[in-house]
Image (cartoon, rainbow, N blue to C red; front, side):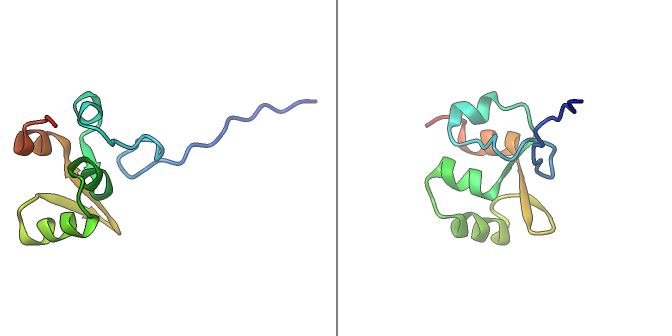
Length: 85
């Protein structure tokens, strides 16, 4: 007897697979999820994650925190930075 199994995919808090990270502006524009993480935004802007954290703490970037994870509105980032490189 054979039992079929499906590989488990670990999901982030917004329901997207953890391996689907946004690392380019085209990826940001094409994404169908509402948020990006602090790490993804740092990679997009080519800055350190601590700089993103500081901007969140200073109120320059609006974000919501769930546990240890920060979620930043994808549309807000597109509006703020124009969505281009």
